[in-house]
Length: 152
Image 1 (cartoon, one colour):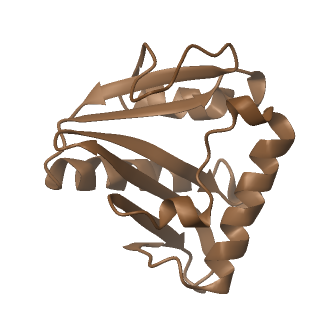
Image 2: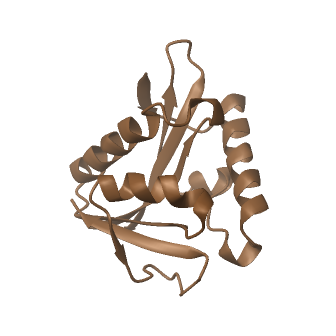
């Protein structure tokens, strides 16, 4: 596996992210969908990583979006459906936490879904020391969302 910052220019990563957004739109109503599309991930202040297997195929991704000089938001964590539960998400999340710390962030927060579909993600975040918190950075209360944070 190789984790590297990706410039979001390739067709493969665009298709991978499009599948991510379409899946989340099928699960969550528009008012509870907070996934960034390709243009959102290209904004200044967002760093995006792709995980590629030994054949060079995209098998995962994740990003951090700057909220302020000490606080960032974890965005767009995804593992390819055929590779779920294979350790990719743990490998990537560990990498992103370390990179966020190296970038000078002292806090990393996230929003994820509250229903059963998102339970594996919540367990992963808990395993990495994220704790449940109040909405942050302009999010409001939403019964379909949960918010988590951790100090770096």
